[in-house]
Picture 1 (spheres, rainbow, N blue to C red):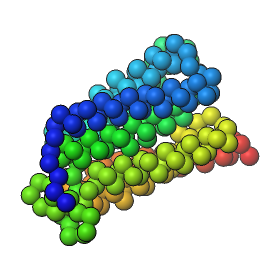
Picture 2: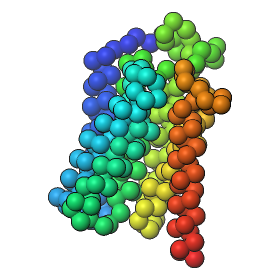
Picture 3: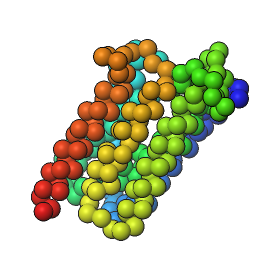
Picture 4: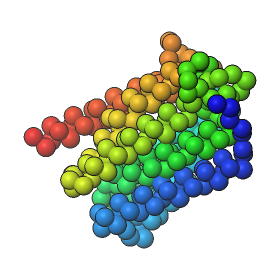
Length: 222
């Protein structure tokens, strides 16, 4: 299958991804009775900080290759949200809102990467390979979209059981980094350290962090 790069369409899909992510965030905020002006400012902070972190992370991880680093977006968004919540005096956890919003948005946004030709996969000869950058390759962007979609489904199913706050945030951190780690083996990368890509090392760190947080929450609960 040969794909044609379409920058305009990719930009449109990216815009749709931000909209979908924002709607998912606000859906859960209303469901949790958190739809306030303060939470709206937190959402804006997460979006702006996430965008900045995604661009900075992409530059640090790839040296300026096209695309955005979702892992950098995580860190930038988290830091921005922490600062704004501290400024507004908000103490109620909002991690679940961002977990839902991020997975919904990235599920759509990875199709923008596919259309734009960034974040492409390694060369392969599989039946579902796509022709990008002069060779048949893994549709790695769609693998990532599927990973986010599966994670989102799990989060929504858990949310229906009215879990303790921050549960979705922790579950996302236990599911998505391992999935992303595996997908990285099918992505083209120029930067490897001890046999793993920079993104894979970040995934390992993130997974370790969420394992620690999950264990701490379980210990407190019991």
